[in-house]
Length: 114
Length: 113
Image (cartoon, rainbow over all chains, first blue to last red; front, side):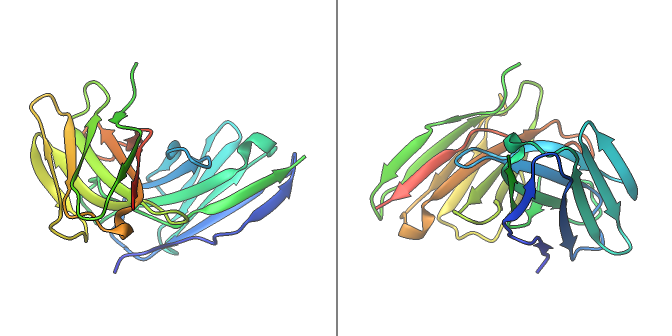
C-alpha cells in the first residue's frame, strides 16, 4: 500500500513567521510531487510542483525535495492569516510520470494567528 | 480561461439510488481524473481517463463507473448508493504531457441519506 504521510496538525504560527509543512512518502518510484492548498469547503488549488531534488522557490513558497529520504516539505515565509488552510501533499505513483493518479496525504491544517 | 467545471455543485440522494456527476476539463486538456474526498481526509483516486480510454482505476467497488466523451468531458456514475458514498467528488484535468499537474474543479458535494 503506497502511502503519503503528513502531520494533521493543526500547525499554528504567528503572522509573519515561517510555516514549515512536511510530508513523507513510501513509493521510491515516485517522480512528481505537488502541494495543494484547500480552504474549508473548497477544492484543492495547486500551489507548487517539484520534480528534482533540492529547493524550488515561488514567491513566499519554497518546496524542498529529498528523494533519498523520501521527504517533501513546503516552507511559507511571512505567513499571512489568508494562508490559513489545509495543505495537501500529493505524490505521483510509480516511474511513469503519469500525474493523473496522485496519492494524497491527509493534509496539514495551518492556522496563522494575527 | 475557464477552469475545470463540475455539475451539479450539490446533490442529495437516498440509499440505493444512482447518481451521475459531470465534468468539463480545461480547454486543451485530454486527461481527466476523478477523486473522492471524505471529510478530514485527502482525496482518493477513483478513475483516470485519457483520450477516452481508462488509464487507471482506484480501489473502489464496481458500483463506480466512468466514461470520457470525444470532447474530453467526463461522467462519473455511482450505483446503489450507500451512506458511505457521501463525500466531495472532485474532477481534475491535465494536459497529458509527462509530469503535467492536475487542476481541480470545484467539486460536487454528494450527500446520501
